Amino acid sequence: MLLAHRNNYFENEYSYLGADLVISGHGHGGLIRLPFTDGLVSVERSFFPSYTAGFYHANGSDLFVSRGLGNSGRTFRLFNRPEIVVLTLEKK
Image (cartoon, rainbow, N blue to C red; front, side, top):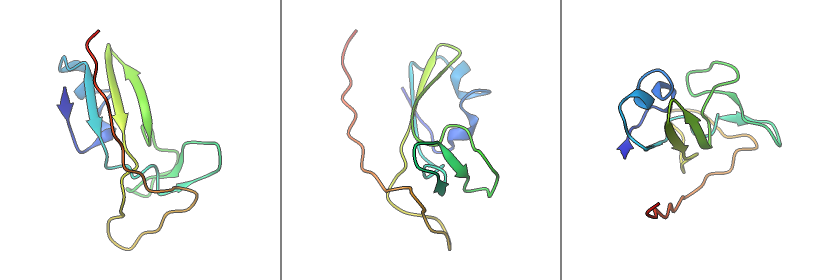
């Protein structure tokens, strides 16, 4: 298991480290979301970010991204409710 702040490094870096599960945040769910879609604007102010919230899979590794509770700097959330996540890990 790997706990990593930056979700955007998952596919090209973290997924090759051998961890079965990567838990991350940073993306805040995409600061702006449209209903029933992924993030529209990232915390870096780019459009259509990857890995904004929930589970993802790449290169034999799984990623979970939390939307978190807060924001960084002078930002706001639109259609992007904060969340507290409880993950339950079970043996295979």
